[in-house]
Image (cartoon, rainbow, N blue to C red):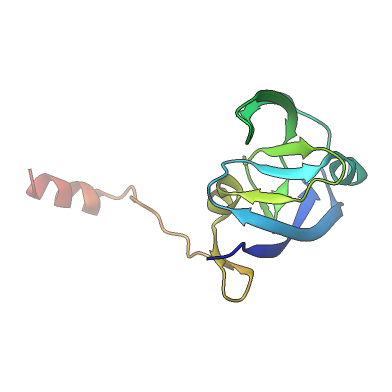
Length: 132
């Protein structure tokens, strides 16, 4: 299977009119996402913390990080500030926290249906007791 790309819009959650849309490499093996620093700064995002990542040559490097809105969903997925010229990367946390899966054939994101794992009614409590 080859590389999969998708066009994704990220927004500044504090100023929703400030956004950037770009072609991201979808990497379900990467937890965090990465966007070049200049693009994040252009939409007014500021670093919120620093996180140490192990990179391909096995070195540990500290990077600035932030959060943004992905495709209309404010998520806790971390965005790493990449170097100038870095290719945008969409990690699995942004996909999962936003409720998307990748459609590699059509190179687009598909929204997953929202599923509640448990509801809080007495009906469920009664069923659970029956099986004990």
